[in-house]
Image (tube, rainbow, N blue to C red; front, top):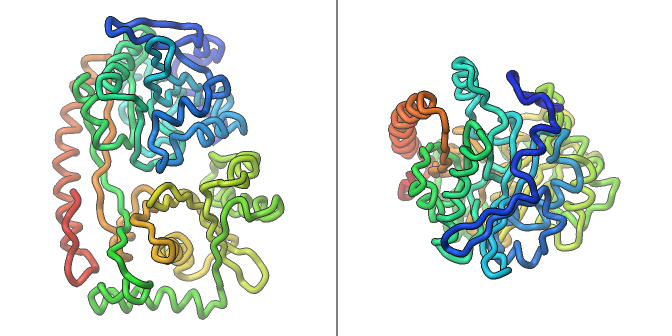
Length: 409
């Protein structure tokens, strides 16, 4: 990806960095004070973490600060941290991971067409304000708050920032269902999409799980696994802090290869994997695939609470069904072994349906300042939400299970 500069305006990084100054301090009638941090290094980890679900690793101080420390986000990548902090009587009572974005890469909710439409009416779209987790299309909290009133105040503040700083828009991506209402109350536009997730139904092992499939779908899945085994490939799962530097660098090489094949630079840096992934207590669970003694594939997953999150993978060569085995079946086996309830294996991918994953609705919400753009996007989203709902129902008719699970869309 490199440094993705927007096609119109805001080419001077110093001007952009002056927006939403870390020295800015704003008050609300409710006795709340809003300020902004150009990084988490100065925010006590204990105070930040107390506001967020401990079972969701991506909103934790360690993950977000590691992205900054190891240059995954920052000026050079077009992600400028401006984290929102909310204090009452000197105590941190609310927070939100917040970025000024100079492009729309690494978000997984695609608004490139909106940017082009904005530029066509001579309204710069970048920088925009983003309340999200960089490079993570996994539903979770986007506001940490001690109560719903603070959460709503944060959404209102984000709305006000767009006008105060003359920004085009503000966005929150993959927001948890119980937080979406705060943005709705601030009159943000809602966007829906589908992901595919696996849910543990209490099966003792993979064979029992496969027994839930219809005969033809079960045969197809087991054939894929057999082809991988017949190729002489074997797999093991290691905790992040069990891998030494050489092993992590081998994993990084495989991960980076996936992006190089698309002509992009990887989102994560080697230092991030060494500094965060290999740290004691790291949530990383790395699935390693070997041919003999040679590492030929790796899938990066993280465990948070009762959920396994699949994020990245890479392979040195092409093997039949290797992606399905490394990224899906090995993850399911890990969940079954450790009693995890859910496997969120990443965004998109209707091919996951035939392998036991269920369609799940995801939400993002958007505030657009330009009335013409807002109206056009609102009409588009109304149609898109209907299409997503219909697609979810249709997909459930193609479930591989003999007794279909209850639709979740």
